[in-house]
Length: 467
Image (tube, one colour):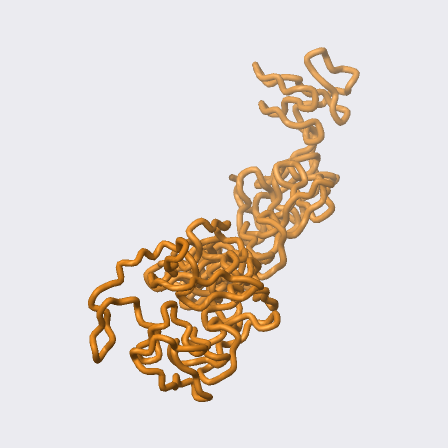
């Protein structure tokens, strides 16, 4: 350190002042210098100081190596010569650090004396560098570093190195539910806000971390739904569901995720035991051999009873309801085919062409009847009427019994004996019922009599079909 001098003394110092005295120990001219000396400022100076070589730009003055420009100059006490000028270490009210001197009113590094910088740079260590609030650019210039709240594109753009959401932030603000506002202040996102960083969740508005549970689907990110308080990935084809938002396809049909809406009465998209064709126990009404692709909508087999109403039609093999019938089997058990349209079965008393058209399956004398009425007639109310006696053998045109035996207007079973009040057989006729010549035929209901063979699109009376 150097002894401080009064400011008035410092201002009087000038390296080029004529009042400065030359070193009295060197009075020879340059022509008189020997080989161990160099001529500087018209005077001879030793090249070396004892065993120390001063170099090509310095000489020995008073036992110390000094630069050539300062060799012929003597500075006043408290100052020293640098680059041909005398400088003080005292600068106003303070002493400059070692290695620095006072220039004007500021302490400057000795190595920066005479160095001129531009483009916002300042000298440090003898070279021009960007200042404390700037950073160097590739082209050699300096860029001012952003403060909190300033726009940024990278951490290198901010003085604190924290660039978040395009602004220099006051903190790292790196939790999933954090956001750095335009003012550079890190805050917590509002409740219910969905952010990609919350894997499959949302923010609760109080914590910078993701919410632990969800309350509704809208609080989960795209591709997820709220499943009993947890945001879960939407399910693929065939996965269980209770709403469309639970499925990746956006379609929940009959409790299973489907590739489309699939809500036609004859369409199915569930899995076996879980579709609209299944009961609560998981038992399906579909044919056991029917196979369909899980999660893909397809039509059920023909003749399947629709899960939802198709009127009196059964399914025809496609997803939509049929609109044309060709036979009674194209209709449900509660309907029949009438001129290409499945129509509801007729009530007792209405006109009919066959028992298949009537509720109960009895068409007697062209009218639906409430009973079989084999040996009588059916009135307009559908009631069986007649006066045929129970033991009448020759029933005539109104009796269709095989052997002509009637009992209470119904053909009696062949018997050798019968209860007098009920007509119940007590001994079964031993005549074979194998359909042979002269023998009775056996119908599908197990009774003997003339069996029916369907023809011309007409069905047999229930139970009268030939086996």
